[in-house]
Each structure stands twice: as C-alpha cells, then as structure tokens.
Image 1 (cartoon, rainbow, N blue to C red):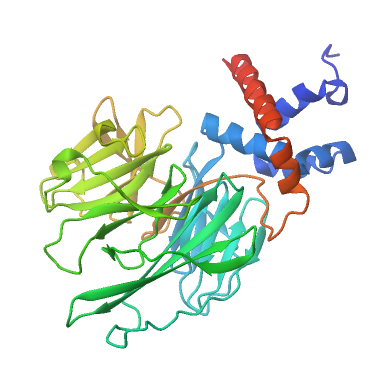
Image 2: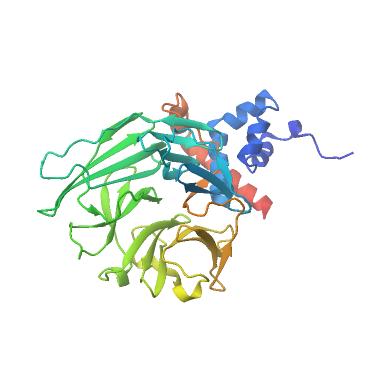
Length: 397
C-alpha cells in the first residue's frame, strides 16, 4: 500500500497547487468529486490562479483553426489532431469569423453580425446586444469603407472589451471619418469613444492584442503612397496612440503586419519576393527595444510561400510556429534557422489561425460580488498568488 496521504488529507495549499496544473477537461470532471472541490474549482481565486499558472508556464495553449463555418482546436503541445468545435452561433450557410481571443475567451461573429463571447473549454457563451452602424454626418462619405474589430482584456477594471471601428471614406475628396464603439462585458453595453484619425490598411483585419492594448496597421491619409504605421488602442484609458516602428522600417514602403509573440508586440516586414523579417518589441513603446528575431528568405522554405505570419512560441521558446499562406503550419527553429512543416490529422486545407488558452474564465455580463471581493483583496490575493506560484515553480524545477 502507498504511504502517500489521500487527496482529502492534503493541506489546501498543496491541493490547490496540484489542481491548478490540471487541464480544464480534467477540472470539469473533478468538480463532481465533492462539494469542497466544486467550491474550490468554481471560485474566482482558483480560476485566476489556474489562468496565471497557464500563462506563466505556457501550458494549456491551443490553436483555433477556422474554415468557413467550421472551427477546430489543436493542442500546441502535441499538434497531433484537429478536433472540431461546436460553436454557439447560427451559420446561415455562411462562415464564422473569430474576432479575437483573451484568457480563454473567443469572440466570434456570423454573417448576420451576431457576436458572442465564448469559452469553448467550459462550453459557455454570451451573445452581445446588436449594434447597428450609424450613418456618417457627411453624406459625401460612403456607407462603410472598412470595419475592423479588436477583442481584449482590461486588467485594470477586470473587464473584457470588444472594439468596433467603422470607417467611412469619400473617394473624391480622399477624406474619411471613423466611428469607434466599445462593448464592456462588465457594464454589458456599447458606448462611443473618441474617433480614430487614421486609415485602416486592411479591411476586416482584427486588432492584435498585446500589452493591454489592441493594434492595427494604418496610414495617416487616404492615399496609396502613404507609409504604413501602427496605432494602438489602450483598453484601460481607451485612447489611440502611435506605436514607434523599428528605425529601419520608418521610411520604407514595405508591407508590414502587426502581431504578438509571447507578451510582446511583433511586426512582420514582407520584402515581397526576397525575404520576410520578424521584429519583436522587448519593452512596450520603447523604439530602441525593437530587435530582429529572425529573417526567412523565400528560397529557404520548401514549397515557397506568398504569406507568412508568426503565430506563437513553442513552450521552450526555441521555436516559432508559422502560418504559411493560410494553408499549412511550420516550426521555425531559432537556433538552427530551419523551417520544418507540421502535419496535423484532420487539419483543414485552408484556414485562419488564432491562439487560445484553455481556461475556466466565465462569460457573464455581471458577476455580482466578484468585482468587490477581487478589488478589496487584490493586493493580498496577488501576493498570495505570486508567492504560491513562486514556490510551486521551485517544486517543479
């Protein structure tokens, strides 16, 4: 017989540490063990602890693949098989769009512009209030030249927010106007915020979440010869600001795309038929902190490619998972500077990819008592969590 004590006799801190390392599917089953376990796993403290453990250890990371009206999930750790997800929105024989991901929540929409916050791990969702597009005051403007969304988490207010930018253009005068609205999950309402005085470079391109802000590639004027730049929208103060580019990209007419790697902003610079450079900003908003992570010549990749997007680091951070032409995935080895294609069972032949954590984070318009408890005990809970995780990592190491 084993000399180990039964789980019920373990100190609560040890039990909590053990459970926070488990995947969500296991935790959902363990909720049925007993009422104390149910209470623990459903508690805001444990949900946050599990989330932060996953983030700190790069665990429970999945890749969401979208093809038309179908969504698939693939574990980043194994990359073995694509599992189809049953999403909660009607398709109307058209495609589903993924507008973003934050802390395990996906924001999805359909052709009827129904929008939902959805946690596929716990199979819970919330449909947002419908938001029509206002007509511009200037009747010379088109109905809507471009529309972009961005989804993210405001840590200062413990709030999930969806940003919608509707841009109207006047082709004759080359003028434009924008309408920006933000949905707050905590307030459960849409409201209008300041306009964005930039032109979106890519229609329907989602904002990239990094460092508590959403990011888009824009130009200052509605002209083809304008140089691309990056604008950010801070999810806490809800203001737009320019983000400095690497010095070598400032005046070049090179195609750029903004992304995120780890917890940093990244920029992909595409030199068309020659190469693709990937830059990472180590310190947010500090121009001098940009560094070139890697560069890939098109001749280095078997089968070549027209489009490349760095998606996520491997758990060891020695490799970067790439999306090539929205048709295949490949690992780029940062040390060996080598590309290796990834084969996944059941993966669609054409897809869009999004990184998503598996988490217990709930989707609720109003979490009564949670905000008050969280705010009043925030410093104490944060210290306990940090000390707890620190000790836990020592045990692992």
